[in-house]
Image (cartoon, rainbow, N blue to C red; front, top):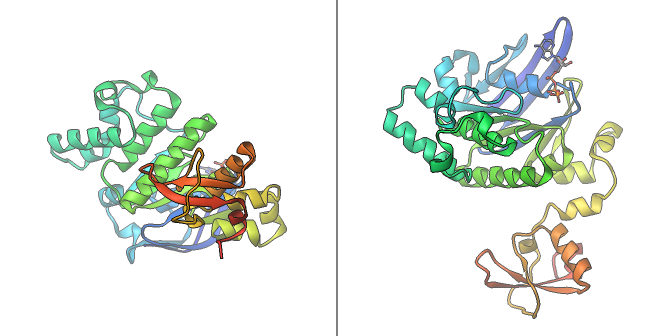
Length: 310
Ligand SMILES: Nc1ncnc2c1ncn2[C@@H]1O[C@H](COP(=O)(O)OP(=O)(O)OP(=O)(O)O)[C@@H](O)[C@H]1O
């Protein structure tokens, strides 16, 4: 658990983060969002002591982060960023191994860990281990960046726009990978983005920053249904709220188990937004549903989009 208590950070007399307090629960995926210059990156750098606050304090597991040694913090907190990429003259293997090497892990264990991470991120080790960053596509570089941040198995992962500057398809697939890494590992993840749809798709909790302060924090549903101010309403945008709400729930939440109907099925893991699309394009009002193994899971009625069947 990370307790942030009233931290302030100014540069040249201008506040970048002002009186910010926040509790981040262990295992939570929290998304920090806000316009450019609102203080997101500064806040993230305060969490891993790349910057020191002017006042206030941050506790990790009840201990001030200033009392951890740099090695202890590096081991516990991984950091992935978009702009400062990989070390250009190091191979993928060396890049991913950076923190474990620093922590003096045995060589065999490092090798094993690097291969495991590459496989997890769908980069076959035999192809990628010895490549250099300039021999990778943008999406592959981002994956290696995420692998590097995960290398020493940190309990907290800080990610600053890790999927920025990627095409929408690669971005969506990396988002999915991150969501499954989170589900599998139970790591605490703090992700910075300026993309509200990324925040709605990934965040268990969203923290919206404005001029160094928290404008609102809450679930994606809170942001869509109960924006706290005109600023929040404007930031989230009011178009397509209904459609975006459908994006928050899965077909599995509404499926009528036991019923069957012929036709091309949708998957229980699809969002209701994807189901809506299938209803419209196929011009039907009942769709068969299959689970992740392709087995029949029931049916979904068009009216189920409005709420659970009664
Ligand atoms: N090292 C620095 N020296 C001086 N000013 C800084 C420094 N780092 C950040 N700032 C200023 O602090 C404010 C917050 O910057 P920060 O990078 O935290 O914002 P951000 O929300 O992450 O923005 P972006 O989305 O553009 O990355 C900005 O006004 C920025 O110019």
